[in-house]
Every structure is written in structure tokens, then in C-alpha cells.
Length: 104
Image (cartoon, rainbow, N blue to C red; front, side, top):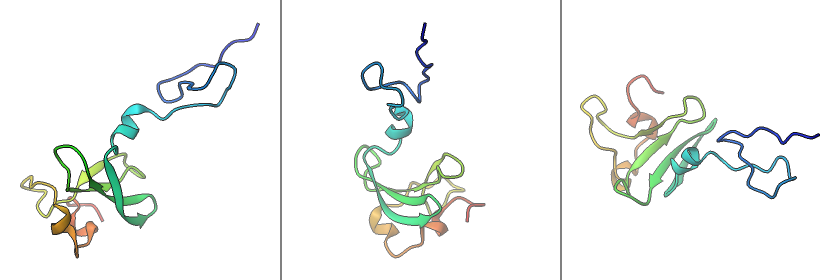
């Protein structure tokens, strides 16, 4: 008697039965960057993202999922909770300078 492989939310089969190894990405992980595009690569899995849809459209975000699984707003004043910078405000700036204290 054969047993079907166990599944988890991150490895639930998407193909027809009998096709092991066919998996889908965890919905919450892919949903976190839906509606955003990479505007700058920083190497080692880091990137600057531009939100194109939703209430934060036009703002820039740091994709730090490579090391800490966080996506952070780029802002000139994290201490006072300033809003994320817009694309126009970001142009000509270094994303590393807009990270919260202690980053970079």
C-alpha cells in the first residue's frame, strides 16, 4: 500500500495526482510583492522595489527577504515614522541611506 506524500501550506501539490514534486509557492510570500517591480538590484538577494498598485503605489521599499524575511519602507525619517519615499524623491538617492537605523 503506497502512501501519498505529506503536504504543507508551502508544498501543496498543484498538478494532477501522481506527479510528485509539483508545488506552488506559499500564497502569503508571493502576495507580499504582487504589484511591485524591482527598480534596483543590490546583490546578495537585496533589491529596491517600486509599488505599482494599491494605496502605496509610487512608493519605494527595501526587499530584505534574503536575510531577515522583511520588506521595509525606504524613508528619510524612520524614527518619526515618515511615509515611504516616492519614486521622484528616490531618484538620485542611495537606497541604503533610506533604511532604518542599524541597516547597512
